[in-house]
Length: 386
Ligand SMILES: Cc1ncc(COP(=O)(O)O)c(C=O)c1O
Image (tube, rainbow, N blue to C red; front, side, top):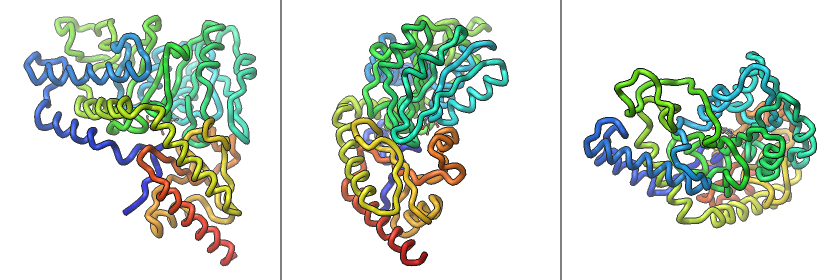
């Protein structure tokens, strides 16, 4: 049996309920949501609405209809940036961002949008709130940041950043791809105007699900138009949420699975999920620290970081470590740049990147122990052969 430790890429396994609900949808529901008006279409529509409602509960969103479903966080952020920004606008971001934000921002730069990237440096890779505030210009329109880093495990202080955004009347967009489901996120308390999330990581849903919450005071222009099941007599896009931004048949079976994932999180409780992940992270960091020849990146305190740990083994490339762990120990981790070249520039780990272990609620202490034993053997072998 293998140990899956690549949950930052996608969570695995999922709670049993997720598959059960998707199977039930496949066998019994099947209709196109909000389209045909017959019982199976209505049932499917109810399931999609229930998913919106559960996510609204999870993120303390007042009106579930302000959530637009997308394929993933990447699509959500592209929708947000292209629908909001105009040439001449200025955006503040950080040097830890994933390519799903970095690349659309780079693209927007070619269209006349100005970008300031705040450097997040070792040892903790935290963002400087002073620098953030000092970077605000007359034309600043948006602060666009991740909540948690998929490379360094850094967690940004949303509430404090939200306060700065509010003080300067700026929009605040958060990429919650890594934190949704495992950290409390409250769009009202944290002053978030747009929240991008993906369904297949901490929310325990299937791949191909995700979404964007949009503050009701904000108008986002759509880059896609088409059938919504509403106002079918008109050839113009409805102007109400979520239909204005949600065209074409959604991934209803996937959203059924996502609803089961969110229900599971609400049932278990975020504190319990986070608590277990902190415990595992503690064991992992402690074990790694005891091995001479391993360099760990990021914050030391498990209270201030995610269960995502990047490290290097002296004398062995990250890709070789990954291969040995997979082939000889059945341990699955990710190696390389993790779609985040900016973060690796900040860490000085270009071009080879790092080995990244990312744990979930379903990993065990025993698995972490086995990983530490495997790494000890890899280091020993390297010392003996060099
Ligand atoms: C911080 C961060 N943002 C965004 C994404 C993109 O998520 P998705 O591929 O589901 O759109 C990821 C995926 O790894 C991520 O780690």
